[in-house]
Amino acid sequence: MGKYKKATQPTLYFIGVTTAKSSIMSVFPEWARALDLKDAVIKGIDLPIHGPDEDYREAVDFIKNDPLSLGALVTTHKIDLFHACKDMFTYIDPYAAALNEISCISKKGNDFCAHAKDPISSGLALEHFVPANYWKDFDGDVLLLGAGGSSLAMSMYLTQEKFGSNVPGKIILANRSIPRLESAKAHLKGLNPKTKMEYTHNPTPVDNDKTLASLKPRSLIVNATGLGKDMPGSPLTDACVFPMDSLVWEINYRGDLIFMYQAQAQAKERRLFVEDGWIYFIHGWTQVIAEVFHIDIDEQCLEKLSEIAKSV
Image 1 (tube, rainbow, N blue to C red):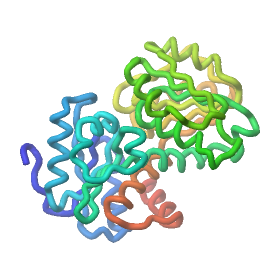
Image 2 (image 1 turned 45 degrees about the vertical axis):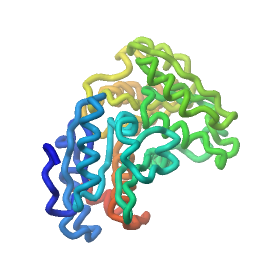
Image 3 (image 1 turned 120 degrees about the horizontal axis):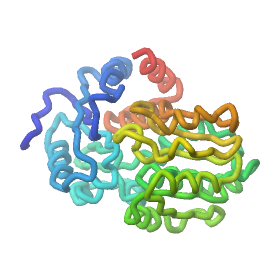
């Protein structure tokens, strides 16, 4: 099993970049007690961003073949891990297949399963702070900074046919590399025709500032770049100007969070609502825990887990 040690207790893995810094390492033991998961534990696996395929395959092979390694939450590496390891799974859920990303690994019977939970967890987080009928009432734009898995998941969630006319008129994905934009465009082909999708190559924060300045009032701007958590900095400069009366979402809850502070500095003058990544963190983890441990987490239980996490 190479560098990984055989689990001696039911183990959930956190595959990320700086996992030791995450609150989940302190929160999970309390959650495990509350959920009666007996002696379940969590362990971090830190891998370099856009690392070699063999790193991903070694980690996934270990989890697949170690009996007490029950599954994993994957962050940052979702797309790279999918491309490196998709042949290793016996079941790939529809979201994972559509988005070409894996955010959750689980086992069910003889199946080794890959899931993409972001369309669900990001949707639940958006419902928490985006007012009902927001797009139908105000017709704002959406700017997703970054073209990784989170932005793809949000695009998929926001444009669902079930929302009728309450979908954004325009979603802009802005990214500093062209290949990731082209990949996003391919995966999001065929979304709701009511929403115009734009894919903008913005190699610098100054370019993102210009795109930001083009938005309508009452837009939604999301930092989904990883800057502020996995890497220092912000996708915007301090000279940026947010559109009036808009929603600004920093999907991270830890790190230097410069993007969030840039928005907060303008919140009063520009009448912004600024949301951090705490609720996204809660939904992201509870969706995976429910899948890996095969349990139900209802709304009442979710509130209890959120309170436990806050107290920790």
